[in-house]
Amino acid sequence: METLRINHVSKKYGRHLILDDVDFQLAPGKIYGLLGRNGAGKSTLLNIITGRIFPTTGTVTLGDLGSNDQDRVLGEIYLMSEADLYPKKTTIRRMFDLADGAYGDFDYQNAERLLAAFGITSSNQLSDLSTGLQTAAKLTVALNVNASFILLDEPVLGLDANHRDLFYKELIKAYQNKPRTFVLSTHLIDEIQQLVEHVIILNDHQVVENADVQAMLDKAYTVSGPAKLVDQYVAGLRVLGSDQLGKIKTAYVYDQLDNQRVIPDQVKIGHYDLQQLFIHLTNGGSDNE
Amino acid sequence: METLRINHVSKKYGRHLILDDVDFQLAPGKIYGLLGRNGAGKSTLLNIITGRIFPTTGTVTLGDLGSNDQDRVLGEIYLMSEADLYPKKTTIRRMFDLADGAYGDFDYQNAERLLAAFGITSSNQLSDLSTGLQTAAKLTVALNVNASFILLDEPVLGLDANHRDLFYKELIKAYQNKPRTFVLSTHLIDEIQQLVEHVIILNDHQVVENADVQAMLDKAYTVSGPAKLVDQYVAGLRVLGSDQLGKIKTAYVYDQLDNQRVIPDQVKIGHYDLQQLFIHLTNGGSDNE
Image (cartoon, rainbow over all chains, first blue to last red; front, top):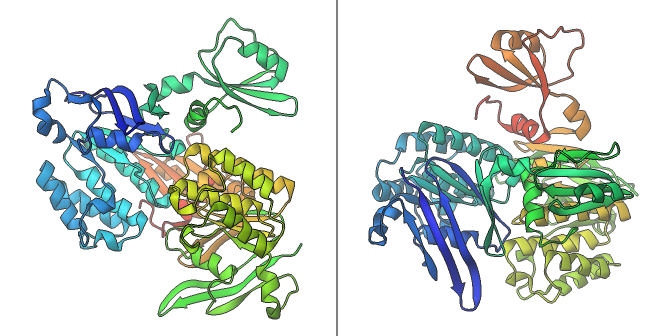
């Protein structure tokens, strides 16, 4: 299994820069989160990786394959599609057949089982389903297609809590049965914190973070207490933002804590989660949006 | 301020029963969650409460007002609308004016401030905005309209994590400035657990839970350990479901724990959250959907 490389990809539409020198790698057999605010360029990036649109500059390469092997590269990558890319009156069975035709070895049996768990059958037409069940049908294809890199753009759109829970469990099951690379692009960051190993954050069209989740969380500390003591304690550390309630200030530090610093009695050190970290990293520097 | 009563409301479409004897109250000045799976009947219920559709049987009453005072009742209730109920080319400013005309005393100043925080202006047309920003515009109206009961159907549809965070903070601010009743109908249960005081759960068209959040969480226990010991321990308690991993079983109890029961060394008692509780209460009795 080989590494998928996104090499210095930029994309302009007219004078608008949608992606600005985006450069990262997707290793085989790993679950990634691709996070960004609305409009950050995530969907454009996913469409470039799957060859649906062309970058203005930069390339996407797989292992040693050269740019002449574009078909072999694309044959390893699947992007969960928007419903309106399918012709009207497409049955779910037909979606399975299309995935089987393009990638081979579609797992029909597991797909039928999963559809049933979502409460639909493969004779249903995609366009007859609610938003949530259209998502369920598309996820069923994505979890059973024979590709090494599976990109999921808004995988839980319209799903209720029960179906989201089912999807997360099925994703783990699919990954354990056959380790592949999954990329989840979603706004529900709290819910994927336990699922994803590595996160790439796009902000203002650039990659602003590309790190393992555990390494990120290890640097995410809150420092709370009287404002003056908090300011003294965090001096020189990277502080992403702060809240103040009366005289108590909470600073959101994103840095290695210095073991040499003595923590005053009135100051408390805590943790914050991936979603809060994302919000602070992408709020444009304002402390209190 | 008076209590809004939903009195034994049922709704049939042809032979389909959408709401089955739904009966509960909304007290003044309280934040509620209205939870249910896709298709449970939440939107139908909200439309009945606001007089947009009629129940087959049952009534909605406010305090002592009789059924002749329907206009006064509806004048106290606002439902955040779907975008397509507005005519095309409706500006956000026009939405403010419509809310002011219908309910009076619209808070234009706070609304403009909030719009700016969402990154839009009142001269924007609703239909020109993305799903997330349409939601932002509709939330801005809902948080500044002069009504005693404010119903929010899918209030965070399409919002990224930053805008959801902003909305939750603004909801608390609006509530603190002027306590009113808010009803949040959403699938993101984890995110509202801290916000809502009381929850009503619809399942299969009926109310299956109507309780304060803290009281619900006080009864939500996990019991984990060797399957045999767990089964013995939970005998006679209400168990919503269970997981098994190897020989270790986790039972999801929804009941008062009996202090008399001795907890064996190998058995651990834990908690689970509102979203997990919801999933177990609405999964149709199957342990492993």
